[in-house]
Length: 297
Image (cartoon, rainbow, N blue to C red):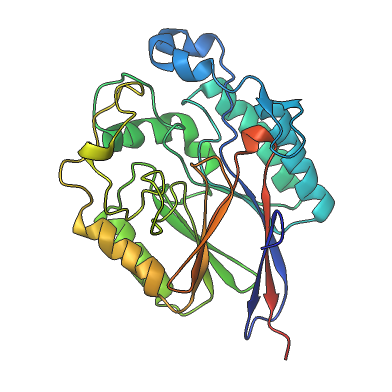
């Protein structure tokens, strides 16, 4: 990695590709359609209205930062934009429409976009039910148009110039059996592959924000369930399915690495030779350019 660039040099790859990673924009827009949900959206609707740019410290904000990222995508003529969740601060129809309008213009300019959700995109604080149930309810109601046509929001793949990109929704911190099956089947193709998720995989020494496969994740380590007005994390920690998924990330020879957000900071952890990359929040003006290049002979 070099600053905000991450480069992969891949034996047998025939051509370069570049993907712009955007995560954690936290759009807070709302309108009259959201008036009946204010009791569930108020806290997050009031957040991130003005932020400090992660490099300059100057004032910025979510809408300005997202527009800047998309301008950068056009200037660099990237092959795609990957959005890994918490692009919205809550499931606002106004914010989703604002985002979709800009992404569709980008697509019309020849740059496709690929989205997977974060824990805020579908979460109305205080809405009854488990996180899994709320995700199942609000993704189709609010976010469905952000996904490729006929894609499963929980797991889908796209190939860009010889690299397989797997978008997997781990926004409830847990992995479902169908998602584990998906990862196994996709990796079995043998192509160089990248996983894009919201919540980063565990690395030794990291807190439970790096919650995918974290051995300490569970009810006892959940510090935010009351302020976020949601059910507490699972008693007893992760399921075996989640741990098996994490093991695949660490051990699969053709997995190049992972790109995630959630923690609002930039980091690189090398676990069993696999780079696990977290990108700083776009709400603070950040993004990352991931480049995939043929290994020189």
